Length: 231
Image (cartoon, rainbow, N blue to C red; front, top):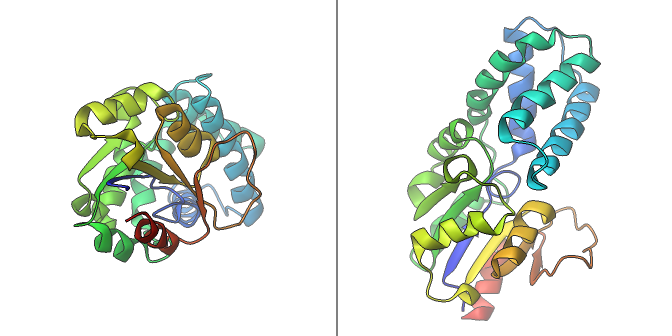
């Protein structure tokens, strides 16, 4: 029986892509950088994902991700990359201005509050996630929040989860489930930690055989169905 759920935030509980696009467009306007087209946003997303994947493989540091992605993006479009530090600092806060729930996630979390323990586990920055969790109301609903920037190590490293377990002291890791959209961060992290894995896969991508995934859901309501079956 599952007694504890570890939730990813971006593109699991909240629509990160919507927040990201709105934030970058707003900052392009405030910095006087001109129009940020859909094509530019698609390219930024590619660059951003590449940098975060490198972080997950321990190839670069979090500061290198946060600045490097914007420096490369600006460089490709002929924008002065010296604005990257200030742009990134304001971007972290701007991300929290757009709250879009995935699959009625707020009510799903509320419905599970007295049934299981629920925690946030995220690689997002403290500045961005604190604002998002506050404005979305997830912060007040969770039993705890664990951010890699505060723990000093990123998902999917086992040490990240060891610090979480040290704080929450679960009775049995077989009763702990991680729910997230990322194979490389959330699912690999769950595998490394030896807990139950639930891949949130709304696009219904094929499951890679290299990952031991216990459950796959395309809608977060499917988690409630899983828990009903487990009980």
